[in-house]
Image 1 (spheres, rainbow, N blue to C red):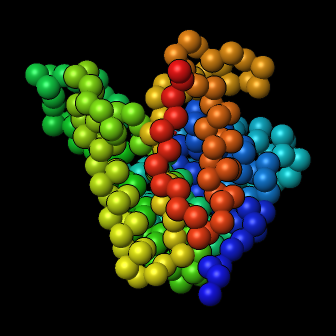
Image 2: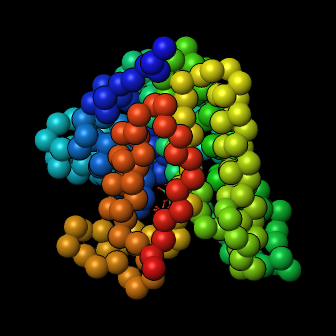
Image 3: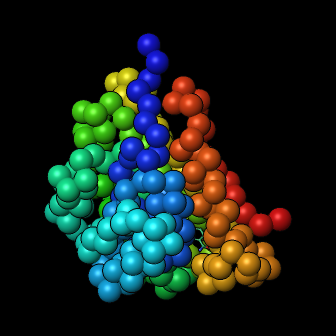
Length: 241
Ligand SMILES: NC(=O)c1ccc[n+]([C@@H]2O[C@H](COP(=O)([O-])OP(=O)(O)OC[C@H]3O[C@@H](n4cnc5c(N)ncnc54)[C@H](OP(=O)(O)O)[C@@H]3O)[C@@H](O)[C@H]2O)c1
């Protein structure tokens, strides 16, 4: 039996960290394709401004700001409930919120380690934990994790960041195995970007040497989501040559 499918214009997405950088580019591309997008992070003012700008660009109200802290389990659960209750579903969850605390092994602090692991890894886990039953119930869902080349390599200046992004890969593999074993129509995509220029973002801007223009991330997301549900595409390495 063919797997259930939906066009992007029928879908509801949550993009964490959608007010800035890569998340903003993802949200803009999804809204352009007709998806209703909840952008969620801590700074409400930033989210509101981004939503207004992306809605103006899309010519319709498709981007909705939602203030939350991914480090709080209750806030993650409330975000998923909000998407489902307010917008009717949660079809695409983009775990994009993230940060780095540059501390070498010799400088590591408990605060720095916890901040990075809780934001980049534990928060994504709570969101998936809350979203997966909703996706399974509706027999449709995509989970997109923004890891990093630091999720495949180790770098001496950011060991906690590397640990969090490698951890995200391990967690994603477990979600995939869960979906395979339960037969859930849920795909998991991981992005492993190298440097992405999140400052020179206008279409005509040249990215800094060694960085990718952020629009490539957005185009790759739309491409990945558009594949037939029977196709497996899992890990996306994307970086400047
Ligand atoms: N740019 C690159 O070169 C690059 C390369 C590889 C991977 N990445 C990954 O790409 C993702 C996006 O990064 P970016 O480059 O676009 O940088 P960014 O603009 O700083 O985006 C990070 C986002 O995370 C949100 N965030 C941070 N802490 C949060 C919290 N506690 N709760 C909720 N949201 C939180 C921030 O929003 P608030 O401050 O409003 O909460 C912000 O919108 C990150 O996961 C990063 O690790 C980036």
